[in-house]
Image (cartoon, rainbow, N blue to C red; front, side, top):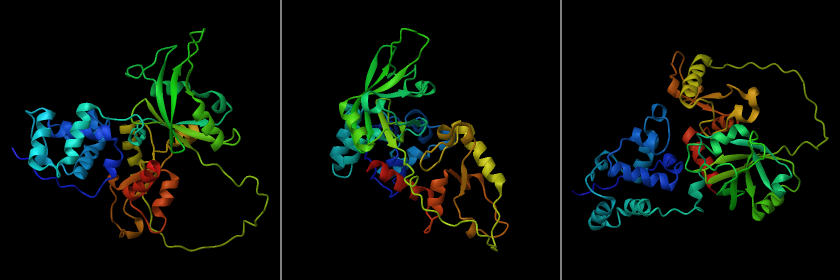
Length: 352
């Protein structure tokens, strides 16, 4: 049976958010094992299918050029047989699919691939203030994060007194490190940490001349890959110049009212699916960074600008995106951007 021609789209948002290893698994499960988009989102990409509804898998498959006519086409054949068929039919056109199947079959994935440092947005970031230990040893993992970074049911789990080798992406370079579960004499003490090697300690000293600042720790494609992201600092604290403020001004504006009920409903549905609130563009979680002060805090962004709506026009919950304050301002800054357009900018910066 001939394999239909590929029909790739230009939208690459979903494709870029998924690592190469997961993309390849999605391709194999789709064309050989006849799996649906919702199944792929849940079992391969580990998303809540009731919320994602298969759109993540569908988007990346469409970008590659795979559509309904390709689904389960060779369900009775092995990956090797499919590769042979595609090569004989059109080696040039089907090269992306062949390469994908070959990588999947032979597990040709490097630990140093930047793809493996794609941030897993389902795991909240760990906010850490800089300390001298980053210059000499590493970083202690807060106890409430042990379940995220060293879960008992994971193949990556390390027992007390043992460690696993990991890779860390910091300041656009990759470093070797290890995740260690310390063997305390007092067994009631739970101490887990990421131990740095010489190169990463030196990198911290170069980036932070003094132990002042902060950084976030993210999980990458798996628990062998972590991302350390520097949190921008306020550089204006030592500026003593003063500027007059407080003059009273009266301004008259004609504005269109926003209905807060739709924002509230969007937050309720989002929390029901993800068990937390975070920015749909950059992943920022106010509660994880600010504790109780950030609880239940997120801003609602109308995907269609209020200024473009006519009086009496209604907004649905799916017309609302939940975003952090920074992303919200960037979306509305002239010229206004759509959610996926701002996401592309952030993804490019993270991958650069």
